[in-house]
Image (cartoon, rainbow, N blue to C red; front, side, top):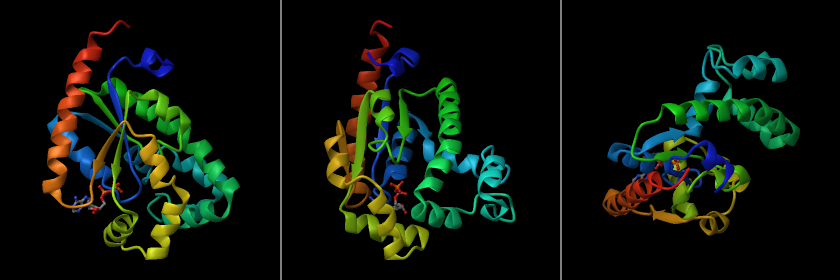
Length: 214
Ligand code: ADP
């Protein structure tokens, strides 16, 4: 049994996938069925929204020009900076990661649901997350489809999407870390049976683990 399970005995799934693979879509579907969804990306966004808890440290570290007029993080400016300056990426992560960890823990304590579903875009890249969850669920689709979806969703250029993808782990490495895979390369009709099957499996596993010794 790992440390995190000792700290948090509830059955947990870590959901990951490359940008545009369909993580949020799958998390919503599992949440509708009863999973307790804790989305670390949404937590990070809240921390960097207007009045967000991370904004004072970000402004103090990087300057007021990294906040928008409303006081949110200027994401485009920051993305450019961290892409070109590795030290800035480390500084930003040093601010955000401990706060994300605290908020994730808070959400975990408050969570109901049949099981915990953590949405973690960079789960495979982060050693600690892999040991903190009972199952790693990867949402997978061809890279060309990721690019097309994100270009449409975020009105981004192909090169911008490809640059983000290049900074993420490879599809092969992500799949190698998976306990379970959802293939999301078509429409909802293809997605739903996979979601239903895994949800039933996770509910059964959660029930079994509720009976395991602490
Ligand atoms: P992620 O959270 O991994 O970045 P999203 O769940 O936001 O990905 O999906 C990326 C985009 O593709 C969204 O606009 C979403 O609505 C769309 N999308 C995801 N899966 C499908 C699907 N099976 N059919 C149609 N559109 C989809």
